[in-house]
Amino acid sequence: MKKQQGFTLIELMIVVAIIAILAAIAIPAYRDYLIRTQVSEGASLSGGAKVAVDEYYANYGVAPATNAAAGLATNTTIKGDYVSQVTVGAGGAITSTFSGTKANAAIAGKALVLTPTFNAGSTSWSCVGNGTNIDVKYLPSSCR
Image 1 (tube, rainbow, N blue to C red):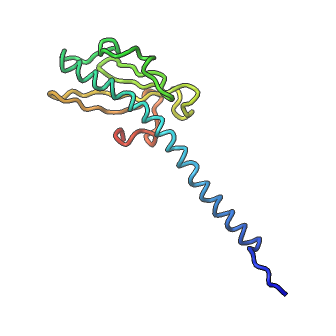
Image 2 (image 1 turned 90 degrees about the vertical axis):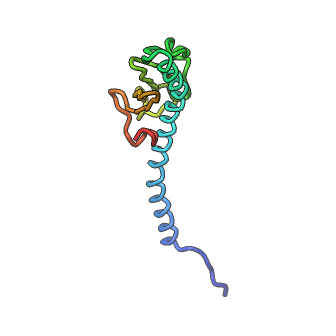
């Protein structure tokens, strides 16, 4: 008589339970990662505006208040998959607004605001969310 080999039902149930636990941990972490990549698109698209604001300040001694003053395209033409517009505002603040059908609900309608501080020939940038605030866990590491 031949001996049968295989897995018992209990062993299979334990493996399924372990996989379920790992998935329960991994899926929320992956979701947060995806939202962080969407927010980083706003920081990336703001890069050109940061250079324009720096250059304007170096030439005129004041920060530009609009995209046109900074020599940039209109705010709605600077956009990406998750960012609907990049706007230069008062004091040289750069606002990347997240919207559209692709942006995650956690950041849709919110904005990443980069605020310049001018220091004797150099500029440092600080990141904040607008009045609706982007959660700190979604901000790029340079903004935390």
